Length: 117
Image (cartoon, rainbow, N blue to C red; front, side, top):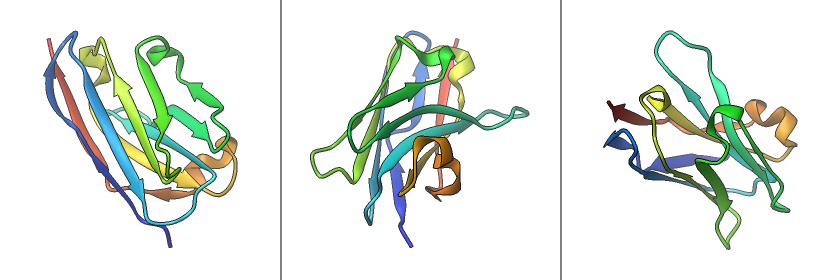
């Protein structure tokens, strides 16, 4: 069982930045971030493979950057130009599979991001 621990959420004004971090207790091939806003479906925000391939939701392209640490068991999400619609609970996910099956992997408990207008 791989455990993931997120940090870095909080309250920020629109236009500001936050950096989310996640550390996994075991090996993962792909890692990523999902988010869920109140009353909305969960969505994939960004994912990254061990080789560095990335995928982003259209709504965050150009504003968010996902990266992995040197130890490969950490993942970061740099969020710039934040908008109120980015408000959600952000979940770190890790899997030994592919990005396509990331949601079937291990999930963190989530960290809340609130963007005020």
